[in-house]
Length: 374
Image 1 (cartoon, rainbow, N blue to C red):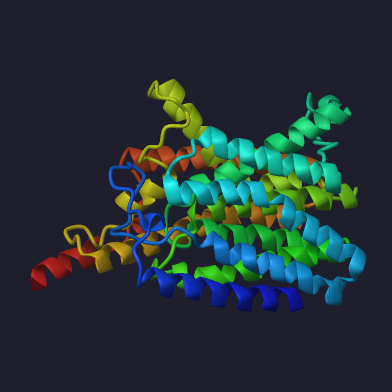
Image 2 (image 1 turned 180 degrees about the vertical axis):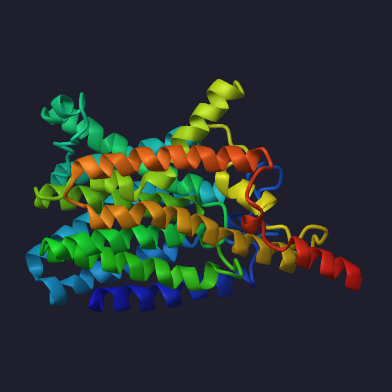
């Protein structure tokens, strides 16, 4: 808990400073990114919110000497240091738009390699038929770990499309990691997960609902790296935790990414890395949140943006809750992973075909009432 409060305070102050400075200066990091199909916000907004989160993690790692002891503080410091390539690459892209997704993935893979070298965070078990024999080898375990870390980091960036969406999902994921860590008496992983929650919440205050600052690619890749590495540390240090626990915790962004790649390449004949505007969160925004239709004011669109995020928080929680309940049972966790995939496809299919349940569609009557008053 002390690390959570430290990270929260630092993130609040640093992010406020970034918002204040952005209000008095124009910069490349404020680019509105016109013409991108996935963009659903209005006007220039600073995209460097990850800076506040990273500074908060650095300070909390330093403070962990007093809370956890020297040896554990060294692990915390090394973890934050290893995140730097992933964070820096994303931040460079936020300022310049000059890095391809492949370049950012490569930087995240370098971060994962560094973590493996200094913290031994390889993935040596999966409980998935056909993969365990790969994970059993040193090279195979390293490959799976790097693939997992880079993939989850990219997945968090994919869902970072609405105010508060990616950050609250990360808070939910880290809460699950902290819960299981304390269940198995792993004070280090639990404390680091709480520090991550504090750092994210300090940014969240300024991001949701007003959208005063965005997480940016740097912040998204940083948080994806942090969540995945803490999960690997939890598995490495505690044999009783199922390796499928981490997959179920992160299944919403992971499945969104895999399905998006399939949809783009196989259904639309497009490169999987090419952005589009039909992610699930974009469909929720455009087809379920209807009260602001007809109004293009920045205030109305920002409110509509923020109203869409809780739909996806519920979706994320729907997978995290069973992960917390059955964290040591791979068979049950595997069943919930399959259930999530089927449920996601059903929900997506209904929304994209305009067949979503009426009770999910917010504000049709409210919108008509407003129109009548005008």
